[in-house]
Image (cartoon, rainbow, N blue to C red):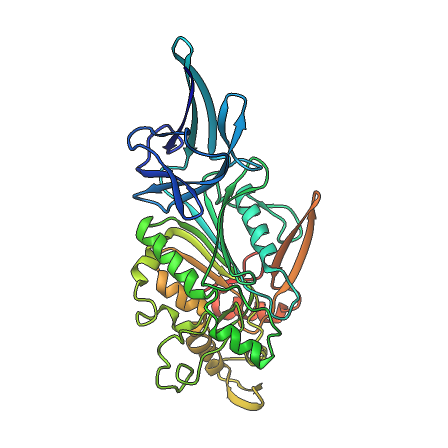
Length: 437
């Protein structure tokens, strides 16, 4: 006599079609508290479980595991599931009660997840601002919100953009300041955090970036590294080819890549070292050699992760004065045969304008991190980055009661340089001043 309680999990493509859900478990910590019976639908009794916080793990054959934190709470009729705070918009909860016999009823809680026919994901990386001036997670949040709403204020004025995130799109942040990787989906209000996982075994050491002891500790620590980002993307490509729709990195940057922790390469791995072709295993920052097979043996999986129309963007600067000096000198030349002189890292370079332009394209731009990433992923993927010699500005825009944060390259500050890149190479910046590599 009494009431039995069951939890049922259904995963669909949004149109009612069943997805290839392979297992469902409830976990507390690393322990499985309840495994669901396989079949259609997956179900499990709630009897024998205690009230408290759990994680509902959904495993698939064609997409990454989805994790949904929920709680079992006490109701007058027994235990009932509920999401903490805002529930994910991709999930609905229905409750039905059936009288089995006189005095015996069954209460069923059905969680229906509408996850799309194929997996969709956006990855946003926030470098640690070692100079202390910016919270780069804020730029990830604004990018995420814009891609969901299909509107942006990145120019200071509300503008329509392509909507790239829907209710079932998983948005993944890598926060190099905390060392965490966190995943989320859109919630009924705000964003629903699926999981938060420390990358490596220790958090990022945030000691002063110029202090030798702090530099050495960050270098040696088993903490978050760009390798964690690469491995995550490769895992995604192996499980859900074409799932990655957008990939953005917000940080300081230079031609050699984003600066996520301001670590370094040891002498053996630096230019001229015996192992210069290989990544230094202690170095946490991106390098242009990262996409060579010796450093990325799973390059095929990494490449497979990107959707055919994916966008990748390396935000931040390429504020190398020598590059800017070259561009300014070449822009004033009457022809490619005109001799020009400019300061190149403390020495005077004497070349023709044509030679300077060729060096800019064949050496500088062709060997940027953006160009190497573009070569690695290929296809129709678009990779953007700052133009050579140009720095990035920060913009905060109040939208309602919320501040949205953006990076951009000022077209007025670099009017001469932009004009030269457009005339000489057909490089037209996007609305934030970044160019396609």
